[in-house]
Length: 285
Image: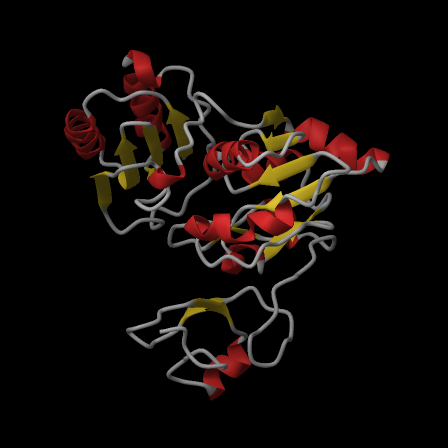
């Protein structure tokens, strides 16, 4: 179950202790980040325990009215429970943007509205705010895919994004948390007609499988790619390409160089030929 909320958290350390005890009592695993600006988490466990977790969250006033995004798990998405306090709920490196989504963020566009925009042929720019290795396995049609290895690198591509002035700009990410802050950054830098896909790509794919989103959705747990039933239908298109032979593949492999560990797509045949697996053009480290 994926969720987030931008809301003032007066005592992040106290919330961290509460979250850790709550998840341990319920036997939940996952990753939860708490910061003065809010909470961002993904937890996994039996349905009954997840319901109890949501009930406990709703009893804490700041965390009410969270939109939880549920999906079928494997029981092995996370090896353990991690609950941490950071400067922001995305990473420790974007707090200096000076963007508070509770004060400045883009207009929300629902999954239904985005689908209608595609179907009607409306002119708009769709910008994928995920890391480059995420959108290599799947992305929306005609999406602008900035070459950023990490979300914190977004300011580097602002000059090219600021040229998108003749049509609405729609930002997308996995569950919505990055777009809340990304659209605030775009608005802060003078852009005007800025939207964000409400509740992220995961919500769109659940409603409109194989419709304008091609490939699979990358997720930050042991599943790596989120498995929708529609991914096994004939309409499913594999957009990922092996870094060695460029053949279609949806298999991610970590570079074995300890100074790198870059996440790349590699087919089984090439993996067998290149073991231990390393970056074909040389590591970034």
